Length: 329
Image (tube, rainbow, N blue to C red; front, side, top):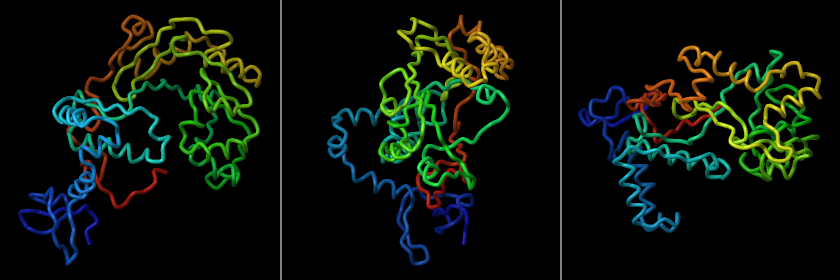
């Protein structure tokens, strides 16, 4: 029995391990040890064949002409497939992600300059010392595990009572999966604080709401998640009413909790520490002063994910079918 993925080799007219094939077949149905089999590509085509242009138009409310035009553009040009991060809030979110990845694989719009698959967003640069100024780190708990934790009081085999929750830069009640399931464990927590700039679903169920500043009301440094750039957001307007920046909220709360000495630096000092003294900043000469002038700085012009069609899989190739799906953790 072969452990490696199996393909049909056109030259030898038999099944072989993928890395032993001289001329692997992309398509075709055959008998192997008396069992009818077909290629993964044919299985994909069978599934896609259920959706004609007319049926797809009916489901998506996009015209047939527009679908045809998009298909041509997808296959011929340099395309960015930007999905955003709301699909996980639906029960078929995983299938959406799989469909997007499959589209990129079939059209070759991945692993080359000028093309992208995924969400376009900026992630905050992170200094681990900000998260644990005393050097003591805590477990990172997946949201999907919260129901079990609140029911059992345990996590990873150890007692793990959760009594309070502080929500910032997130809206789990709306984007964490099943809102009804989230509300069940949410209501079991004694004290919940939500920091937000709008009246979100999570705000509705908070014990205390802290109005925070908008990105255009603070200066901050951001790092591209799908492209190698560091950028800066400029403060355009003052925050309204009692809204405060995330850093000011952290400083005020830390004083009341008796740990104010760990958060005494100004925003300017923190930004310089984050940029000027970072490994990336020191290696590439990126400084806060440069960012204030240039706005965006590319730190790696060769960073192309899956370049040349090489993927982190057993075969090094993209997979459109898998029989051995396992949990991430």
